[in-house]
Length: 192
View 1: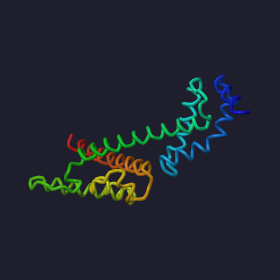
View 2 (view 1 turned 90 degrees about the vertical axis):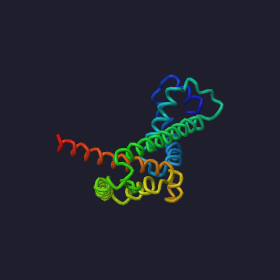
View 3 (view 1 turned 45 degrees about the vertical axis):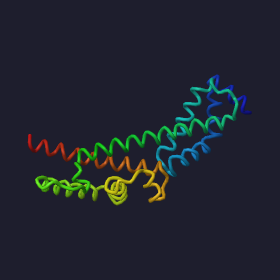
View 4 (view 1 turned 180 degrees about the vertical axis):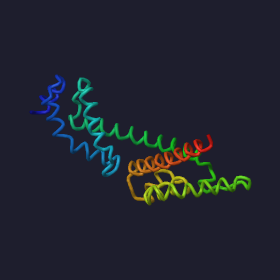
């Protein structure tokens, strides 16, 4: 089928046209998603599927001023940028939540004399949780929370794509937050 026939088939909701477009362009869109989100990013495949879903839903608005592949690529790129922005918001939010939960003492800041015992207990717990998370998370969280590096600075230091850095920081912060929350709940149940 030529492109005009495929587009017409998509507008009619033809399953064969959808499959033909998918098979023709999925690899290129996957490469695009990997370029923006990072090689082997688990969400790259999701972006490809979302791009096709958006394109199929909005095919009636396709004006044909570019090729179908160019239009699909633009959709995929926009979805990747939206995902990156979402990751940045998640990292910022979870980082703030984590800092509030653990307190500034657990992150190596100065401790008031009357809070020294509590701060030491938090540091011990934080060290234990970080050991449980593994070397990758220890390094990511050290750079983010102790050194205060931005995602861009971490990207440069680690020589990784921004999407990979954001995803790893998000996962590591979420795991650490879950450990802190589980410990808090266990502590509350001991005192109840």
